[in-house]
Amino acid sequence: MSSLRLVDPELAALVEGEEQRQHDTLRMIASENYVSRAVLEATGSVLTNKYSEGYPGKRYYEGQRFVDPIEELAIARARHVFGVEHANVQPYSGSPANLAVYLALAKPGDTVMGMALPMGGHLTHGWPVSATGKWFRPVQYSVRRETGRVDLDEVRDLALRERPRLIFCGGTAIPRTIDFPRFAEIAREVGAVLVADIAHIAGLVAGGAHPSPVGHAEIISTTTHKTLRGPRGAMLMCTAEHASAIDKAVFPGLQGGPHNHTTAGIAVALGEASQDSFKVYAQQVVANARALASALLEHGFDLVSGGTDNHLLLLDLTGKGIGGKPAAKALDRAGIETNYNTVPYDTRKPFDPSGLRLGTPALTTRGLTESAMPQVASWISRAVDAALKSDDDALDVIAGEVRELLSSYPLR
Ligand code: DSN
Image 1 (cartoon, protein in one colour):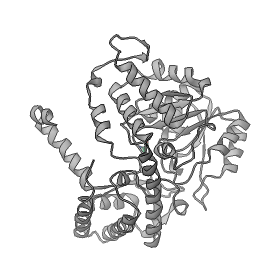
Image 2 (cartoon, protein in one colour):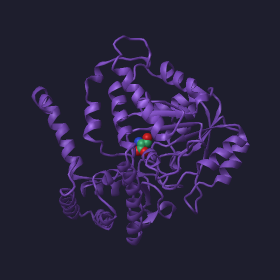
Image 3 (cartoon, rainbow, N blue to C red):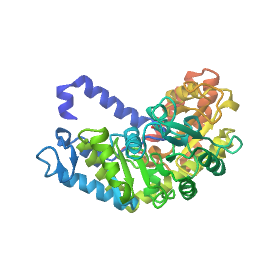
Image 4 (cartoon, protein in one colour):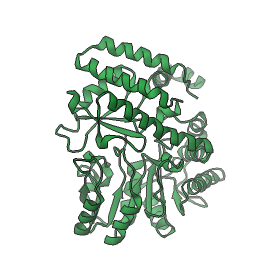
């Protein structure tokens, strides 16, 4: 950061402030993580200077003798880590990646099926405010009110009735294992293409801590910056049959030049994800989430679906008498970073919902294990109690305790 400090001290101070904040905070937003220094270096490299429209060996600009092998390396590593036939590493992020799937495989007005956003899905799975909900005919499935889980018989009935062109599985607030074989069976029965959006769980899939969609979903979409612990970006993986359509949809269909610095960061992250240590990481993420779920249940919290199989927990705070938003703000003051979230069948509005989403990917990267989870749950419980009493001093005390714990877990 020495050049930045010299050239733009104001900006440098803000970046350093954010680094310190990330150091001092228990980061529990389920979609966030800490990348390695190696990923940061690749992402902050001279590759940001280069335009490379096209694909390796077939570019519209000269000077690609280093960029081509970098992208080839990222593709080869994606194929190796996930065991897929084809990978495109150019999508700028998850939403553009999903748009490319629509462009490749559907026509405006086609019926598309996905999990409703308030049930745990994603905007780009056909939610009405998204382009995907406006330009296609979305039908949305839910979770069962009593179990908080997807009922695949209901999904099948809906698919048989509506005959979608695409079926999306996956989402942003699903604490349970996604049954890819069953979704694939349904897609086959109705002649739909199954798209597995594994943005949240890609690192768990890579590390063997969640079943893989490969062999079940013809298209797999993922961001690279969540459990996969890479830079902000995305990938589309698919069977050889769809490779050309997917590539054409990403470029020139939707995007211009790929962000080569991001591609390099993705390659580094995939190299890291192929190591045995990453398997240990992925298992630990899940072990931590399970331990946290048990400890929160002991504190009287209500967990959607009763617990978790993966990296995330969704708390319904209705019984605690507080909304998700004031709870998230109180936790932030207490040094615990989360996000407020709708819960299935929420009676409150999305900007002031009943839920809180928590995840363990970042704190696991930091080195915390199951033994720390009772303490984390106790802080969350104390912070919620303090919020109910508007006791900011109590929140500041917790923030101090969090800082003290984290001082033993340096950022690497
Ligand atoms: N923003 C992502 C998340 O937090 O899950 C989804 O796009």
